[in-house]
Image 1 (cartoon, rainbow, N blue to C red):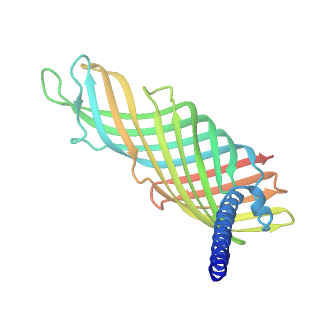
Image 2 (cartoon, one colour):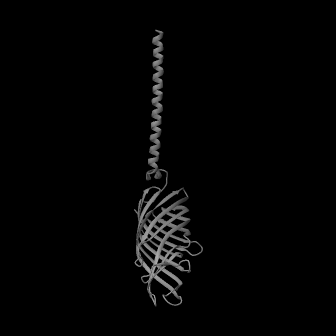
Image 3 (cartoon, rainbow, N blue to C red):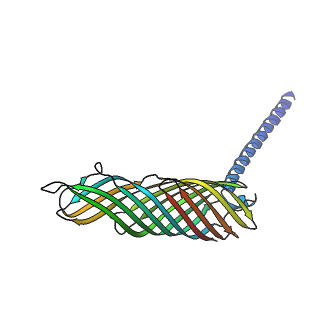
Length: 290
């Protein structure tokens, strides 16, 4: 009888342990499921709506106009005279170059995640470039001849590119980081002009009767290099080609801006930037969301 009692007690203890183990396993499974559900909900718009966070409409179409002016640093200059080999003269002469650029484009964007907006850009680039330098060219016979090269070129061509914006915010403030790449095919140059534009902003926002006001400040960095090619016929030398490799003298600008969303459908934006030296930037934008 005692052995039966002992066996009964052992069976009860084993059952309790098994039930406890099953309960712990069920709790762990439920906890993992809840974590997975929370992570999934965090990536969906409904999670924010339940917490009173009003997100932008998911899709947008806009028109942008961007005006930029900045000095350019010449990194290398090569001269080709007739059929003679090209020679670099960047270590012997100073060059003054400035650019004035206007970008006009259509921008298509989509909020693929509540905090991540991706976009594509299509439009046109127009650039006015001023260059001034004096070259001492040595003819086959005789003394060097100083030649002054001054040019104002206006070139344009198609522009296309894309980028992404990451946004994080609270009830009254927000922070964002943006990166985009663009390529321009200008009609005077061989090849393309490729540019990376990186920026970050921190700002304040407020909603007034379904209209949202945003104000911000930030900093931007542009990485853009190109080669300016000048072809001309010079006395004595004949056909002469000057190739100027250039990049922004100071790639950083500081920016302030603001935007107004009308009834969560129409967005108007203006932003101005400068490095308090040689660069100036103005952005105007209007878009509709749906």
